[in-house]
Image 1 (tube, one colour):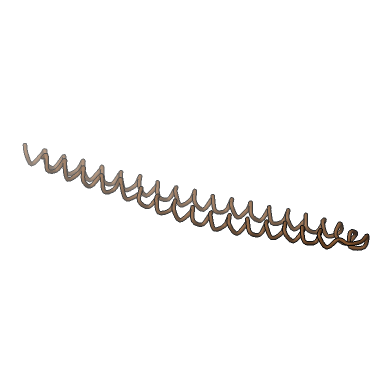
Image 2: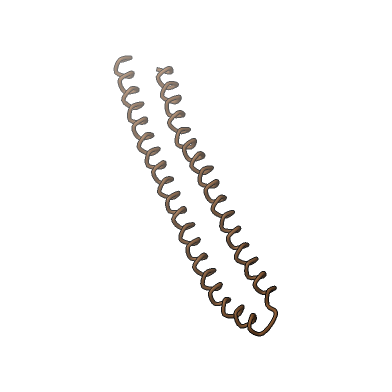
Length: 131
């Protein structure tokens, strides 16, 4: 009977650690994905800022100043569009991560329930056999 209990415990430990391993892998993959995304976004924003600084440095007279100020509206629109696209992309990544975590949790719950049911059945059979 003790052997059955130890075997059941070992089986439950295996089923307990499998979801944690999947979750850790998912977490690392998601962190890598988010880091790559953020580095790309930082680079794009830096390039936009540097481009505007170069255009400002090219202002030499009133005509170039007029052209520069007119281009500022376009730059603001482009920046706003980029921010909105990045926010949507981050939101999509977060929703994907949430869905994957929920899948892991559901799988873990189903597996734990099945393992507990199997262990209870084996223990019940062992009791009947011992009696």
